Image: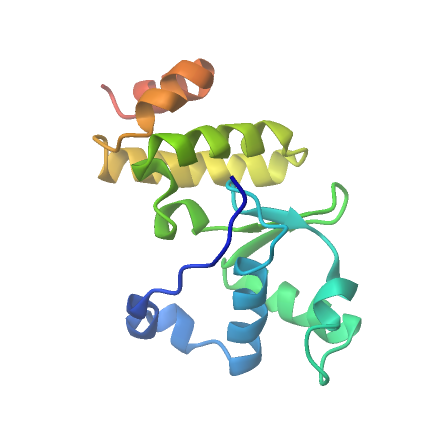
Length: 159
């Protein structure tokens, strides 16, 4: 199932980290979140030139600067070597693990991620979610489809 829209949560406006960012950062981040190329793992192809074409005042150099600053703010993770960009909290705010079918789509997408750097951050985000929401419906799919990852989460949290 392809994504048709991006979630923009009103709690964003209460996030002090979000307040520290400029409007250009907000727009750049939302362009990533709403990209039709963003997978259910929260990963998009590293194509700054494509994003530069989304606004008349953007160019590739500016996108690269904004992405660098978003990465420093821990909003995204970039791996130039593998050509991947991760929207770090995508799984949390898109409620991917709340729905079994979306969790299956996540697993499919996660298995295609080439970047060890990105995978490490996704595992960390999954760990946080597991600790906070151990009863999400999607954990069953993770356990079935990625047993080694589920075991890692299970051992880490003593369940």
